[in-house]
Structures are given as structure tokens and as C-alpha cells.
Length: 298
Figure 1 (cartoon, helix red, strand yellow):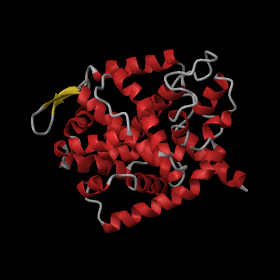
Figure 2: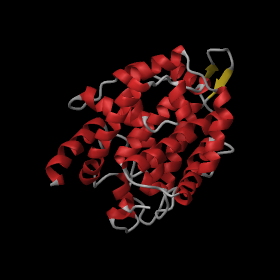
Figure 3: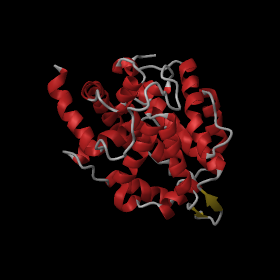
Figure 4: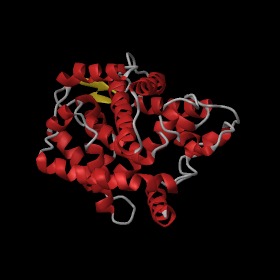
């Protein structure tokens, strides 16, 4: 019963995120697990498409609240004209550092570090910023890891606290390779981290402008408006309450977000049924594992 419905959703994903663009090799060398343990938490969490895309959009919304992160995007990104391209590049980086060999992952990290060397300037308030700032790198990482974990929990299945702690401990490796420091290793540590940085956050006209671009982006898929509404709404439901308040998402917006999350919850099993040959499955074969290994629950 799933196959006829799963096929069009597979087509949707491959049109939005075409395979083969990144040039990343997920098949060699045999037996190389890459940066993360094959039997850990990150491999399972990062294998769920619905959780990852909604979680990534949650992270983008959170990142608009940080003046330095927002200024880097505002000054050095072509988000106004190629937001889909930016999403694809981020997707390739996360997939590559999750499932490619160690050498391939290190190559991707080195490339991003070279890009970061050029990203610097001043914020709206005149404070200097640099993409290589360890504190800024920690913020970007924590928002992404938080979003991915909450996306998995919402659209794939429960993750006990011990496994959530293991996920945060595993995933911080990439952030530290990029230059982040004092990266939280546990779920309680992430909660404490958010509490410690809230005084630095603000919702400005730039935040509103970036969110406006996000809310009007055109995905290269059938029914792009509906697709955008579903995933953005689902991502918004993952936000912490304090972020929802800062972003001004009132009762009307929250009702619309909840509808998007319900639609994605219905579609999530179909995405899983249709997406059986992605980076996670290639990595399993590289390790001599059943490709369904990453579909195990917690």
C-alpha cells in the first residue's frame, strides 16, 4: 500500500535535492565508518529525511535570532536569490560529514573553514563578527543538532535522554573540527546553553527579512507553496517556547504550523519507504551492514 504513495514523494525529494551534485563518495573505502560510529545515535537520527529537513528549518529560524550569525548570512550569502541552493549545500555538508569516509569528511570541513576565513564584518549594532569565532560556531552547531534531534523525535520516534546525550556528544566532533569550543555534550547541557545565550539574541528587521525570504522560497517541486508551508510549519513546531515568543508566532501561526506538522507526520513513513538508497544506506554497505541498520529505533 505504501509503494504507490512513496514513489511520488521520492520524486519530490530527488527534484528538491538531486543526487550526485555534491561529488561526495559514500562507497569507499570499505570498512571506514567516517566521523561517527556506525552503531551510534547520529547515524540513525541523520538518516530520517522528514526529521532532518524540518529540523534544519527549525535551526535556520533560530539562527535568525543571533546578530552575528544573521549578519554573516546578510553580508556574505546569496540567500535572497538562491536560498534553495544554500539549503542543498548545507544538506550535502551534513550528509557528507555524517556518512562519508573520514578523509572525505575532513575534506568537506577544510573547505568550509576556507569559506569561513572570508566571512567577517560588523553586526547591525557595529560589533565585529567572524565566522571563525568559536562561540558563533558553537551557536550554529547547537541550533542544528537541537533541530535534528527534535525533528527525529517528532517525525520518526522517541529518543531517550541517554541516547540524546550520546547524539550531542557524537555530533559535536564536526563543530569542534570547524573551530567551535565548549560545545554542550548532553541534552541538559544544551538546555543550559540556550538559557545562557538568550540575552545575546534579538529579533530585528533583518530577522524578519530573512524569514520573509524563507516563507516565500520556491522549491523546484510540484505544489511548491504547499510543500513549503508543510515543512516550514513542521520546523516551527520544533522551536523552544522562548524562540516562538521572540519570533512572534502567535495563536494563528501556531495553528498553521501544527497543521503542517500533522501533514508531515502522515508523510514521514512514506518518505522512509521511498528513500532507501541515500547516503546512509551507501555508508551501511561500505561497512558491510544491512542498509536497514540505520532505520532501527531507539
